[in-house]
Length: 291
Image (cartoon, rainbow, N blue to C red; front, side, top):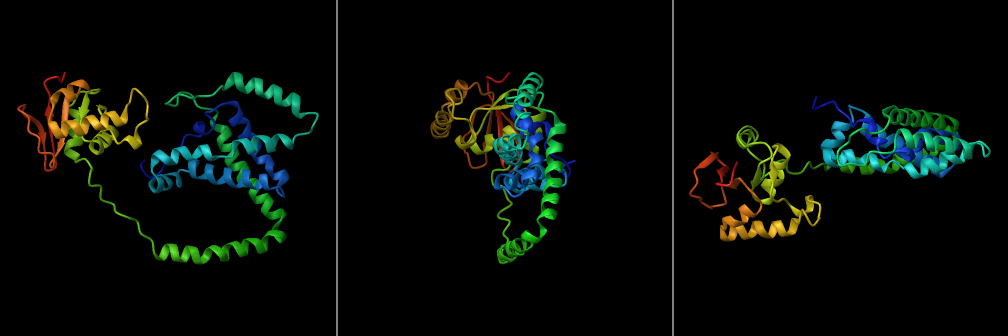
């Protein structure tokens, strides 16, 4: 449902053998709870994986920072520190041959999934092992050092108390209205009446939202949300879009293979073609080049 979901655990281990080994070794930091690297590994791994894998936390985290960013947070697990620190805790004579054997096996079984879309991912059980293992290790460490840490915990809580009181007392959720939001009717039209894979031309902000809601291509988008590659040419496309709305030169639309033009109420351009869709905020033209 839209209120209970989480990142697939296989995403956390998708980058292959080293990430898998790091997460397997992470709970071993409980053997070095007096060391700073162990505190970093246990605290960061437990916190990040709890946010990513707990279905009652991930939706709230995603709402706060956006789904686009929340799924990327898994990359902030301190893999390198967990890997190096965990290996340092293994017996000296056992570590080298065990590491070589494990490296061969893991590389053969899970070489990594580095594509744009997740195809296979890594072993999901390792992500869950790291989460619950680190939570258990934190509990053990807290019990073992309760006398030494009680004062520090109290001091930390008292320090952040005025920050929390001030922050929640002055909480501002910010504006919730999206001035560039698509209307439900336009979304239905783009999904049901525009053929899948068609090229739609619109202003950058409108195009950005069309790409999120409909299975079509957009000819441009806000450059900050487009990979700056030669093929994408986000700034060239933005300049072409501005040129089109200034000159109404339809050859620009043909250049990008656009079959549909979406205009907002503020864009006064009129075409001889009949309007294919209209509502209180948008109108859509089907161009002669449309399939």
